[in-house]
Structures are given as C-alpha cells and as structure tokens.
Length: 104
DNA sequence: GCGTTGACTATTG
DNA sequence: TCAATAGCCAACG
Image (cartoon, rainbow, N blue to C red; front, top):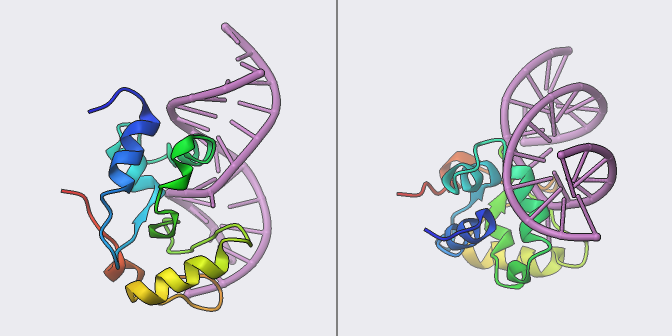
C-alpha cells in the first residue's frame, strides 16, 4: 500500500463501483486508521488535491445519510439518478444496506 | 509538541 | 427512518 492515510483512502474511494456506496467508517477502517477515524478523512481529503477526483457522491454517513455542499447538490442528484441510487427528500438513501459496497 | 479543524460515528428517544 | 448530542482520529500551522 501507499504511505499516507489519505493516499490509501483515495485508492479505495476510486475503486467504488457505480450504483454502490460506502461509509466513511469503512474507508477509514480499510485504510488502517480505524472505524472512528472517519473524521480524519474529511479533514484530509477535503484539503488534498485529490478532492477533485474523489467520488464523494458514493461516500455517505454510516446511518445512510448523504450530505454535500449546496453547490454540488444538483450535480450529485444527477449522478444518483444516473446510477440508480434513490435518495429521500430528507437526504437519506433508500435501502441503504442494499446499496452498500463491501471491499474485498 | 499542542490546539484547531473537518464531505463523521455511535447512542438515545 | 429522523433529530440531537457527545466523542474520536489524522493532518496542518
């Protein structure tokens, strides 16, 4: 694997298939940080140059909630519709456990 | 080496 | 599935 925590997270994030989602905790744990290191991901990736290539729309909360900056909302809604991911008016994913993607 | 920061998580009702 | 609260981790100045 690579050196930094953020680098590993980026590798994993880019492997997420279309129509599937993962939680920050899963990425954090898979990256070697721990299930509660999800906080670090936001701080690190959001500030790294990788933030432009990261499929943020496939990374969601552990409870199935999806949040994104007001400016990116419209663009992401299109992506969700295109990938067949249903989002409720409250910003929660329908059948969250069914949409979840587990790394091998 | 310490405090701040952030696209978070677990828990409770 | 919703909403509100306390707690955790890694990178940066």
